[in-house]
Amino acid sequence: MAEIDRMLEANAEWAERFPGSKPVAPARKVAVVACMDSRMPLFPLLGLEVGDAHVIRNAGGVVTEDTVRSLTISQHLLGTREIVLVHHTDCGLQKSNDVDFADLVERETGRRPPWSARTFTDVDADVRESMRLLRDCPYLVSREVRGTVYDVDTGRLREVT
Ligand code: ZN
Image 1 (cartoon, protein in one colour):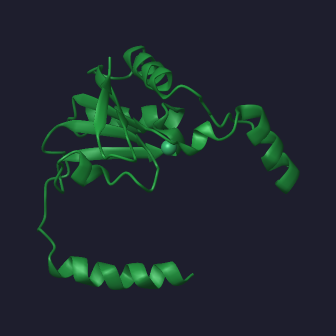
Image 2 (spheres, protein in one colour):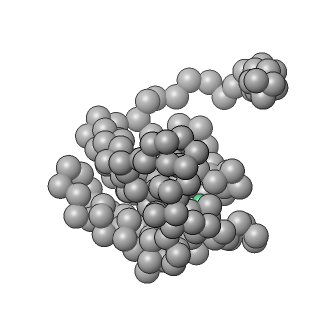
């Protein structure tokens, strides 16, 4: 558990330059749904500042039940109206498939997960599927959603239409 010590030290420095309190509702009224990939620093790559946006992350940046829960809270309680999806090149979810992954977990733990890993091969198709799921979502007040793919080798974001 050495990483937590480094993080606590880093946080002490952060607190020194803390930008001050912000309102809980995101200033730019936007929620970002993104992959958890360690190479995507979402705030700088999207030009966001503290207090600007909600960021909902999971493996693949896919639309799960919990993504919908978070977006519904984001819109109804905290006033966001736009959704931006950020998937990316070289995603860990492209390195396996749902059956092999479930086999792997079962082999190593004795338990087969009841959920799907949601692996994919075509990143653009995966973004389109996420956009479709959100446009069909009955709980949102705004279904204004746009999808992008981030290139982890160039830092460039490309919109998927
Ligand atoms: Zn990823």
